[in-house]
Image 1 (cartoon, rainbow, N blue to C red):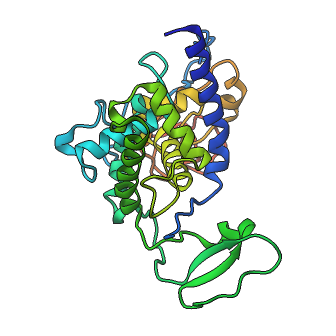
Image 2: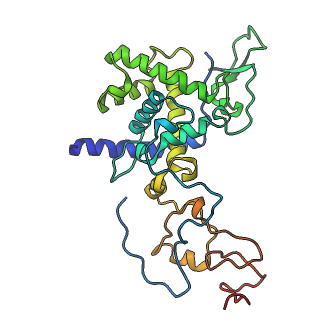
Image 3: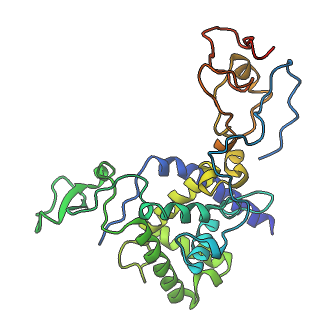
Length: 312
């Protein structure tokens, strides 16, 4: 890979990481119309900056292989390959610098869509649906039972606005992307080069991809893809993405930590905790001793390491 391409991918990654701040704070609306760190310094006995290996049997282990067509829960093999190609260009990576593909983002999306058609919470899906308008006065409503006019800057208050479920959006979105790819390159998206796939995504971002997008705009579908790429990259590995916690390592996030002692905080700059998943979170029962990795009070004492009768 050329230096120019490497720099392009790095810039794309930075842009994605900036964009997820906006993505995480917004609700997509689909309308019906790291350099290695030095070894940490020695710390006093009884202190460890990172918890032990996986212990919690109630949390599923993260997958460590790419999506297997035989075990897909929602996508068809072609849908999985198409979504994998799109998310891999939204957040590109390589084995030594993982991106969406290496993190298993497609597996995360496939798992998510298998649950309540992709809804993560109870969602009202009956009309009227929000239609956006610009200016001070909404248009005259012709059918108040089907449409409610909403100012463009207020749409985030109205939640999900579509008769289509997230699962429907992906099925129709893949069909639309392939239709547009055929119109532009006479081929399916998965057969195109990285540069051609980037061109397709750029057209989606700009709203120039119109062929095939009859149920929603290409911009709306890109927003859904970007949001779910961020979720799959940075959620707990138990959900299928963030394989080997590569997303958390990318941004320096410690993951699921039970708590921090004053000593932890004092040593954080020189000996940061390694990321850990929910599966690695040490069990804790209030009032019961469970090792030095649980720092919450267990006896009402303010001692950092209280002495228990069953533990010298």
